[in-house]
Image 1 (cartoon, rainbow, N blue to C red):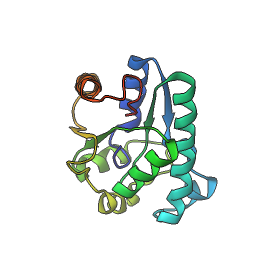
Image 2: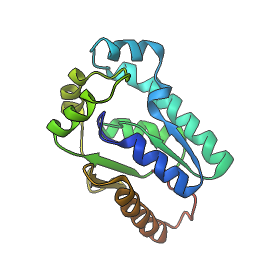
Image 3: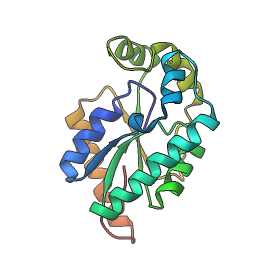
Image 4: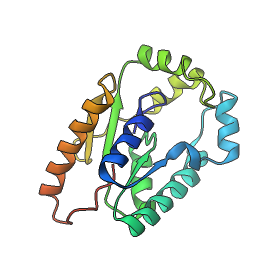
Length: 174
Protein backbone atom coordinates (compact mmCIF):
# COMPACT_ATOMS: atom_id res chain seq x y z
CA UNK A 1 0.00 0.00 0.00
CA UNK A 2 0.99 3.62 -0.40
CA UNK A 3 0.60 6.62 -2.62
CA UNK A 4 1.32 6.58 -6.32
CA UNK A 5 5.01 6.16 -7.08
CA UNK A 6 5.88 4.50 -3.77
CA UNK A 7 6.89 1.20 -5.38
CA UNK A 8 3.85 -0.93 -4.53
CA UNK A 9 3.73 -2.69 -7.88
CA UNK A 10 7.44 -3.43 -8.00
CA UNK A 11 7.49 -4.90 -4.50
CA UNK A 12 4.16 -6.68 -4.93
CA UNK A 13 5.24 -8.44 -8.12
CA UNK A 14 8.52 -9.46 -6.48
CA UNK A 15 6.74 -10.84 -3.40
CA UNK A 16 4.24 -12.76 -5.52
CA UNK A 17 7.08 -14.44 -7.42
CA UNK A 18 8.79 -15.35 -4.15
CA UNK A 19 5.58 -16.65 -2.61
CA UNK A 20 4.52 -18.49 -5.78
CA UNK A 21 1.14 -16.82 -6.00
CA UNK A 22 -0.80 -14.40 -8.17
CA UNK A 23 -0.14 -10.67 -8.17
CA UNK A 24 -3.08 -8.32 -8.62
CA UNK A 25 -2.35 -4.76 -9.73
CA UNK A 26 -4.99 -2.62 -8.04
CA UNK A 27 -4.78 0.03 -10.77
CA UNK A 28 -6.21 -2.45 -13.29
CA UNK A 29 -9.40 -2.77 -11.22
CA UNK A 30 -10.36 0.91 -11.54
CA UNK A 31 -13.36 1.72 -13.68
CA UNK A 32 -12.81 3.60 -16.93
CA UNK A 33 -14.50 6.61 -15.27
CA UNK A 34 -12.02 6.56 -12.38
CA UNK A 35 -9.07 6.35 -14.77
CA UNK A 36 -10.37 9.30 -16.79
CA UNK A 37 -10.91 11.37 -13.64
CA UNK A 38 -7.34 10.73 -12.53
CA UNK A 39 -5.93 11.24 -16.02
CA UNK A 40 -7.53 14.69 -16.00
CA UNK A 41 -6.14 15.52 -12.55
CA UNK A 42 -9.36 15.05 -10.58
CA UNK A 43 -8.92 13.27 -7.24
CA UNK A 44 -11.18 10.29 -6.58
CA UNK A 45 -13.92 10.54 -3.98
CA UNK A 46 -14.94 7.82 -1.57
CA UNK A 47 -17.92 7.12 -3.85
CA UNK A 48 -15.43 6.45 -6.66
CA UNK A 49 -13.26 4.23 -4.49
CA UNK A 50 -15.84 1.92 -2.85
CA UNK A 51 -16.72 -0.06 -6.01
CA UNK A 52 -13.02 -0.27 -6.94
CA UNK A 53 -12.10 -1.66 -3.52
CA UNK A 54 -15.01 -4.13 -3.67
CA UNK A 55 -13.94 -5.31 -7.14
CA UNK A 56 -10.32 -5.77 -6.07
CA UNK A 57 -11.36 -7.48 -2.83
CA UNK A 58 -13.58 -9.94 -4.73
CA UNK A 59 -10.69 -10.75 -7.08
CA UNK A 60 -8.42 -11.30 -4.08
CA UNK A 61 -11.00 -13.66 -2.57
CA UNK A 62 -11.13 -15.67 -5.82
CA UNK A 63 -7.33 -15.99 -5.92
CA UNK A 64 -7.15 -17.11 -2.29
CA UNK A 65 -9.85 -19.70 -2.99
CA UNK A 66 -7.89 -20.89 -6.02
CA UNK A 67 -4.30 -20.73 -4.73
CA UNK A 68 -4.45 -20.08 -0.99
CA UNK A 69 -2.59 -16.77 -1.19
CA UNK A 70 -2.47 -13.56 -3.23
CA UNK A 71 -0.44 -10.36 -3.27
CA UNK A 72 -2.11 -7.13 -4.38
CA UNK A 73 -0.87 -3.60 -4.89
CA UNK A 74 -3.45 -1.06 -3.75
CA UNK A 75 -3.10 2.46 -2.41
CA UNK A 76 -5.40 1.63 0.56
CA UNK A 77 -4.74 5.16 1.80
CA UNK A 78 -7.28 5.36 4.60
CA UNK A 79 -8.10 2.89 7.34
CA UNK A 80 -11.67 2.74 6.05
CA UNK A 81 -10.34 1.68 2.63
CA UNK A 82 -8.21 -1.05 4.19
CA UNK A 83 -11.19 -2.26 6.19
CA UNK A 84 -13.41 -2.23 3.09
CA UNK A 85 -10.82 -4.17 1.10
CA UNK A 86 -10.49 -6.79 3.85
CA UNK A 87 -14.27 -7.07 4.20
CA UNK A 88 -14.83 -7.50 0.46
CA UNK A 89 -12.06 -10.11 0.24
CA UNK A 90 -13.49 -12.12 3.16
CA UNK A 91 -9.90 -12.90 4.15
CA UNK A 92 -7.52 -11.86 6.90
CA UNK A 93 -5.08 -9.36 5.49
CA UNK A 94 -1.82 -7.64 6.26
CA UNK A 95 -0.56 -4.40 4.76
CA UNK A 96 2.89 -3.17 3.81
CA UNK A 97 3.12 0.63 3.61
CA UNK A 98 5.91 1.97 1.44
CA UNK A 99 6.68 5.44 2.69
CA UNK A 100 9.00 8.17 1.43
CA UNK A 101 9.17 11.93 1.01
CA UNK A 102 6.93 13.98 -1.25
CA UNK A 103 10.01 15.15 -3.16
CA UNK A 104 11.08 11.58 -3.93
CA UNK A 105 7.54 10.61 -4.95
CA UNK A 106 7.31 13.63 -7.25
CA UNK A 107 10.63 12.70 -8.85
CA UNK A 108 9.41 9.16 -9.46
CA UNK A 109 6.06 10.26 -10.88
CA UNK A 110 7.69 12.77 -13.22
CA UNK A 111 9.91 9.96 -14.56
CA UNK A 112 7.09 7.44 -15.07
CA UNK A 113 5.84 7.86 -18.63
CA UNK A 114 2.54 6.46 -19.78
CA UNK A 115 0.79 6.14 -16.43
CA UNK A 116 -2.59 7.83 -16.04
CA UNK A 117 -1.82 9.14 -12.55
CA UNK A 118 -0.37 12.64 -12.95
CA UNK A 119 2.07 14.08 -10.41
CA UNK A 120 -0.50 16.83 -9.72
CA UNK A 121 -2.61 14.32 -7.75
CA UNK A 122 0.18 13.41 -5.35
CA UNK A 123 -0.71 16.13 -2.85
CA UNK A 124 -4.31 14.88 -2.60
CA UNK A 125 -3.07 11.32 -2.02
CA UNK A 126 -0.63 12.45 0.67
CA UNK A 127 -3.42 14.44 2.35
CA UNK A 128 -5.65 11.34 2.29
CA UNK A 129 -3.00 8.90 3.57
CA UNK A 130 -3.63 7.57 7.07
CA UNK A 131 -0.58 5.71 8.29
CA UNK A 132 -1.68 2.36 9.75
CA UNK A 133 -2.17 2.43 13.49
CA UNK A 134 -0.66 0.04 16.01
CA UNK A 135 -3.79 -2.15 16.07
CA UNK A 136 -3.62 -2.80 12.31
CA UNK A 137 -1.55 -5.67 10.91
CA UNK A 138 0.82 -3.49 8.95
CA UNK A 139 4.51 -3.04 8.32
CA UNK A 140 5.87 0.39 7.40
CA UNK A 141 8.99 0.40 5.24
CA UNK A 142 11.22 3.03 3.67
CA UNK A 143 10.39 3.11 -0.04
CA UNK A 144 13.93 4.28 -0.79
CA UNK A 145 15.21 0.80 0.10
CA UNK A 146 16.14 -1.53 -2.77
CA UNK A 147 13.28 -3.88 -3.75
CA UNK A 148 15.27 -7.03 -2.90
CA UNK A 149 16.00 -5.66 0.58
CA UNK A 150 12.34 -4.67 1.02
CA UNK A 151 11.22 -8.16 0.04
CA UNK A 152 13.59 -9.74 2.59
CA UNK A 153 12.16 -7.49 5.30
CA UNK A 154 8.61 -8.34 4.29
CA UNK A 155 9.26 -12.09 4.13
CA UNK A 156 10.83 -12.03 7.60
CA UNK A 157 7.85 -10.06 8.94
CA UNK A 158 5.34 -12.40 7.28
CA UNK A 159 7.11 -15.37 8.84
CA UNK A 160 6.83 -13.76 12.26
CA UNK A 161 3.14 -12.97 11.62
CA UNK A 162 2.41 -16.56 10.65
CA UNK A 163 4.10 -17.87 13.78
CA UNK A 164 1.90 -15.59 15.87
CA UNK A 165 -1.28 -16.23 13.82
CA UNK A 166 -3.38 -19.21 14.85
CA UNK A 167 -5.38 -19.16 11.57
CA UNK A 168 -2.50 -21.06 9.93
CA UNK A 169 -0.33 -20.58 6.89
CA UNK A 170 -1.62 -19.35 3.57
CA UNK A 171 -4.03 -16.82 5.01
CA UNK A 172 -1.87 -13.70 4.98
CA UNK A 173 -2.45 -11.27 2.13
CA UNK A 174 0.15 -8.51 1.79
